[in-house]
Length: 452
Image 1 (cartoon, rainbow, N blue to C red):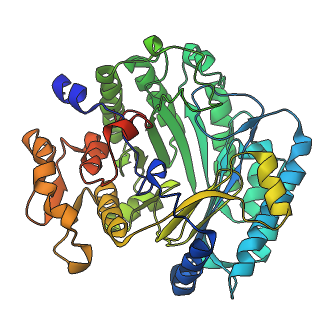
Image 2: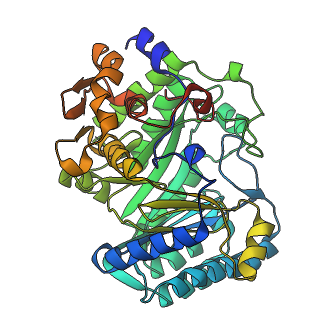
């Protein structure tokens, strides 16, 4: 552990769930008509061969978790469920009207907010309507995010009956002081109960999300949380770095100060020690923040070199089309991105008037597509090559020069047509990708969380 490296590279930077990243989209030149044609073009090419991915954003939560930077609406009124679901289905119909054939769904994920804020009956209605207007790929995968405090047996059984086999539960940390600071009180017993319920019902991939770098958190806290997690043996573990972004409107991250957060050195120690424990317990390091057991599809994708990364994080299957439904959702047709409006009332008004609720987007240039593939290769496989003419870029001819500090520090090796990340460099993968990002500049970097 080199404190000089930590101090040098612990700077704001993207997580590269897309390239270009959202702050660098060319929104001025984005046109809805161009985006539609790009989407339809990609859909027609790939629907029958690889299907599509579908993300549904359900933004409601009953209480505010102060570590969260997601788009959400805090309310205890459950009469908001039905109007929102009807709006999502109207948005889905807008997409169906663009296509000449039914979409083949390869992956479907429900995120939030708190998806289990919604009643099992309302979730059943929403998903049944979507499934009945689509085809399912032979190897489809449905997954959702469950809150341990309000995910009931009825939720789990209803979604299982619809085809869901993967669920992830937000654990964060089991220390009571930390839970109070982040306003997320959930004892180990609640996580244990819902994990065992999911396993009894038949879920084959159960994930736990753990966060390091939280306020008041120590290395001992992280070790304890991972030790307790071992008892429940989830199939996947997302071991996330806490993103402190208090400047985002409405994210609630002002209940504690920067003085209560671990510094860069301690935070990286948390990651290194946590990773070491996870490896000791039989988990495999998939990528930047994902670990899984050998039987999980994520590990199999790593072994088969089919691992992919998109707006939903690491995934075992790639689809060129990803449609995002609901407020703030992001979609991807490989050659174009879009993001929906964030305000719920505006979103519902637009779709109720048969208008795509898109607030902004970006049409990728040929150069964007090349760099996007290289960053994807680095994030998923820790290496990339550009000896193929289709992946050659003038920007990459300068890579050896731009990578020189990283080479000098032993984080990468670079040849005339290849970048390869060393074991020492893997914790700094975001910094490595930043070296070939053609949009990044110091002023724009401040919009991101720190890389360590």
